[in-house]
Amino acid sequence: MVQNVRLRHYSAAEAEKVLTQLVDVYLDAHADDGPLYTAERYERQLAAHVPRPGWAAVTAWAGDELVGYIYGFPLGADTRWWDGIQGSMSSGFTDENGRRTFGVSELVVRRSWQRRGIARALHDELMGSRAEERAALLVRPDNAAAQHAYDAWGWQPVGRLRPSWDGAPLFEVRTKPIMPRLMENNRA
Image 1 (tube, rainbow, N blue to C red):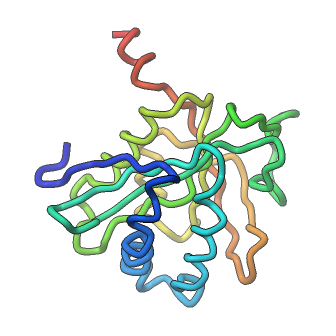
Image 2 (spheres, rainbow, N blue to C red):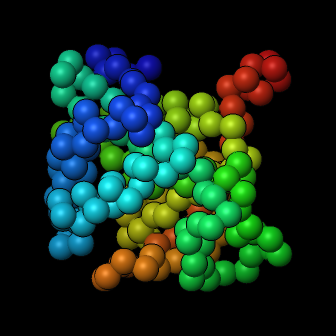
């Protein structure tokens, strides 16, 4: 556990309490990342994501200040997550049923709190609470810090994808097998 930081899980039903703070942390973390990272676009993203079945978040708090979070949701059979993926995937790679893949949509930490292990703690806490077979995420190829972290945490690149939102950059797609804590504890 990161010193002086408390982790807390949120469900979709509880998310409304912290939506404004989620946007604030997102804007702080992406302050130097260009015009796509706006409050309006991110508010639309949250409005579309939070209601999805199984949406879950883990937040990091230093006292009353939200300093980071990770969130995502299981990919259902009707998901558009994989639309436009480029790469050599095996047959059935993009087939979803709501139990196979947990899509990680955001992992952000306030700039003043970065490089303290908070992102890793958030990542491990959320991944350890999931029962899906694997997780998937998108990461910008030019985000060297995130690329390095995901390499260290066992995420494998599987292709590239440009989301359907206006002006979206080309992202690297990564996946990782999920091993819930219950399974980890049984192996010990």
